[in-house]
Amino acid sequence: MRVFVAGATGAIGRPLIKQLVAAGHEVTGMSRSEERAAAVEAAGARAVVCDVYDVEALSAAVAAAEPEGVVHALTALPPKFNPRSNYLKPTNRIRTEGTRNLIAAARAAGARRLVAESVCFFYRPEGEWVKGEEAPLYEDAPGSFREAASATIDLERQVTGADGLEGLVLRCGWLYGPGTYFAADGSSAEEVRKRRYPVVGAGTGTFSFIHVEDAAAAFAAALERGAPGVYNVADDEPAASKEWLPVYAEALGAKPPRRVPAWLARLVAGQAMSEAAVRMRGASNAKARRELGWQPAHPSWRQGFAESVT
Image 1 (cartoon, rainbow, N blue to C red):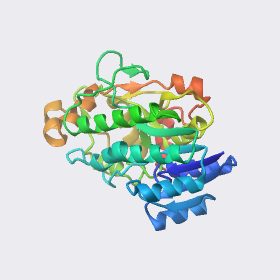
Image 2 (image 1 turned 60 degrees about the vertical axis):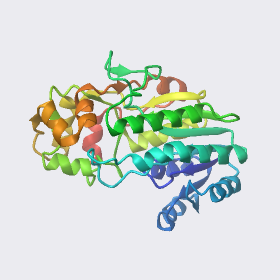
Image 3 (image 1 turned 120 degrees about the vertical axis):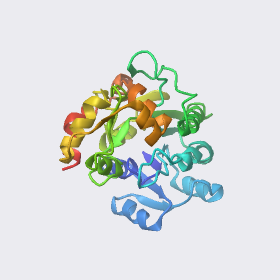
């Protein structure tokens, strides 16, 4: 299959390029940086340097690749996770305007299938603690998360409603592994080592994690299998922060996390993050396992954390 990967040098894009090349696909990877594009070529793919907001250049790049499948794994996250800042703003623009541009380019190039990255932690925080894809999303999330939720929902609607394309959305869990905030050299790891990443309140907020290699494998599977629609891509063990955070700290060789009341977390980290720490819902991967024929090689963060930070 001829595949065009937008976001080829991101946390998911890097392992995805390698997996697709190894499987025998003809791959073109897009990057905004000449320096990073060299890594795409080193992995055995053709590299193009392009910005998703340059509509003419984007259309030409996608058309030249003549793709059967297009992957949208574009984000613009800063190196350091800072919940007090509007760190998601550039990615929000990508998920709205950038998605629109990429869909138009894919359709014009005659692509058949489009697989796009979303997230699985915007389910409405009510009812059961682990959600399937049919559960309502948190459209009125607090603070800066509301804009992020709106942009994410817009991306999903654009992709699944794209005329002439088989649109699949992969709602990924919290990424860990190389190039992520939870990598050994990531900003979340740094905060945990400094004991500035506490268990908030009762620590009931439920996280779903996914290793970047497993997320990439889900994208590779979705290019070939599965009906259009939405899929949660996460490991087999959604877990409350009071469960996973001490395990992550131990894997890093750090002291156990502190515990702080929710009101203090709200003052320090803001309403959105303090609420997520106690109310966020996890996600079931049953549909992706069943319909994409995919399963994570790292079925639980319990083993995955230790393997990824050593």
